[in-house]
Length: 387
Image (tube, rainbow, N blue to C red; front, side):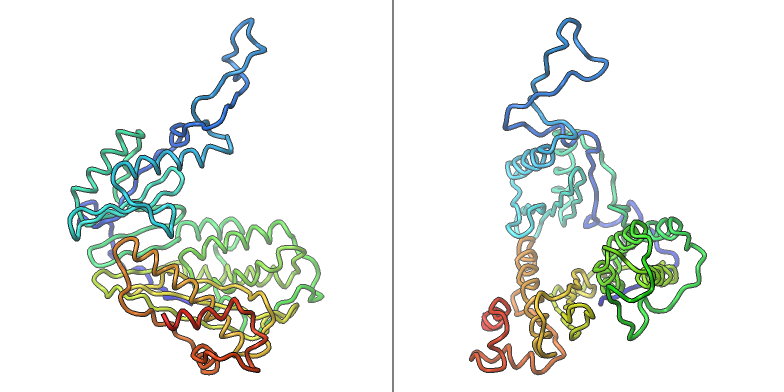
């Protein structure tokens, strides 16, 4: 599920764009050194710095070092305290997101990923102040406009933002020797079923896991391969040659769609809309169904999932009902997150489902013979619909 867009010729990312552009700060190699230890800890004297006649002694640490298991949490505690001290408000739904408002409509949003910080705002004054504080406090490097982050490329123009993984995809194809392969039009063969034992013989488990893991990372900007990648991840132990061939087929599909990605146009309506769907007993091994959902905000999809259900559905209506319930939980969380940075949804979030029986069950508040076997945890969608 999702919308893919191709890169149009002539798109550039200029440093002199509007003040709402997304920018990046980085503290490579020094972030964890700012964390303060809360417990007593000692380390051996490092090679080359051993004090003569004191070889049996150790150093007592006052601050964190790279390699300590406490270092990431200590760094997060340090920067969290500093941002709150500077007037930022931490999101209650997303622990790494902070917002700061000045007057009515001027805001800056900050997101932290280990020692990388991405920030965007509607007020140039707030953005400049934040950048200066971070550089002075933690000796961070200003990387300017956000071009590349965690293997993803970001193109920012006056009209839209385009996110892709072309560089990562090319390196992935080269790694597995498929850079010149013939591409296919679909990631999976229509109607083909995968099972644990198919009689095709065992494949190289290590290489199979590498391919599937790489494909799962690629789903960050490619929702069109989400289902296929998650399907293959069910066979990480003792994969067969058929599984391996299916993984290579997905790579061949990716080779023909290198310039696919996600496009978010500016100026579109900020309305959250959800879509959910499910198959029925799609898993050949345990007869469980697979749920999927996608959410759009404005004009682009930004949240999606494909996951096998925890129980066996006795009908298509039950499978679709469970899928809608899981999508409702995600929609509730997304509404909280949007509210945290000033995009409160004042109207109900539409959730599109293509099964009339599942919709009827959702609107029926009386438990009856056809629904009493459904796990009670999925019935909270009824209360969400009332709210």
